[in-house]
Image 1: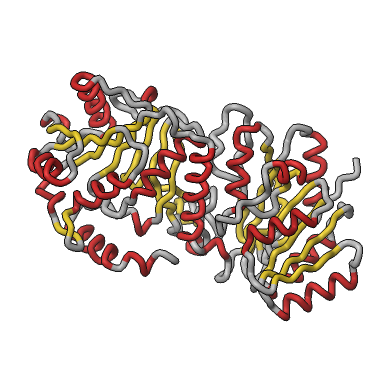
Image 2: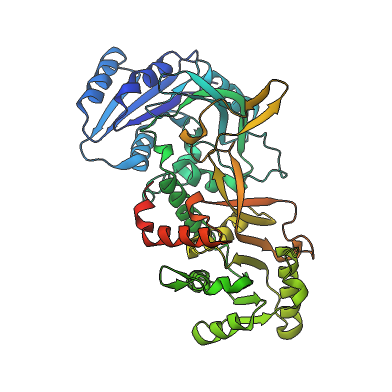
Length: 460
């Protein structure tokens, strides 16, 4: 079987690493490949580098120059139209392949005939190409794996015929092409992974992967598009429960000219396709405020459910019992929102619901990614958990995730009195800066400062 591989390298401003990326394709032990270089936006240095290789490998390498930048997805579709290969892959201009990568992928596809999309482990390298760590993916087990950590978009292989059949890449999104591809193939049982590092993923100041907000927003929009396209919310009966414990009248503290409780209520009000909103509180003052401004359903829960040791699970379970008894209301999906988290947006709540349905989880909790450098103790003292600098990385599967106590979405049938999560627990990622949970005056001060200047932080 003669399997030609199409590799495309889109490049806008990574001329410093461009040669290394190209050479990693040329030096492959598997030689049946074609390379498409795309300069996205005029860059003379990158064009000159590309022309040099085209002159040297005229039958193997082609160069395209977009005078006006068309973005990652536009470049992907251009390469797909020009592709002659059976397999299709993107190599970013600042990354590079291991010498045996193509051979290993081809052998994997030969052994796994039904696989349409494959991805591998990879090395992290710094700006000087020094290996600083290794990313290891969990092995995929058919019908048992919660596939909610998609493969890296670059350096994964997909059968060209399959990619064309699903329409290529949607250019209405400006990032995360691999995430969209993952969702389109999610339920086909045709995703496989190679537990071997086959490329070098570079971390440096210009790396797109450091723009946390851009990545999260792109993923959120892709999930919303996919859920709408597949009509996943059809026939779902969705209940949002707002947990509103008004300890020391904290919910009526002012943050940027609004009461704390107004932030969560305003966000909930904007979420679409919700059948009922229910407020569980320990204070009649909260219910009075709601009846005047929002008019959601609610009740003052028993005093024993407002003690410090009471869990969210207990509050949810009791609310469901109350709604069943008084209104005969039985939801399919239950979403808990914490009234002490003023930065939660309607989009965050919607994403939790979309994530729950897309990945067929039992539950989804909102988390933030911990970028801090952690240590563990051994016989010689403290040792870094990871050798790389965590603050240089963004949105990767080996991160530590912290429950930010903002949102929980669960399938109703898994909810028990002391556990509303079930066994398959997914996550929706929020920014750490958006995960403020009001517990004291410092938190109030911090939230006030942040919300006054929120837009300044959106592109960090």
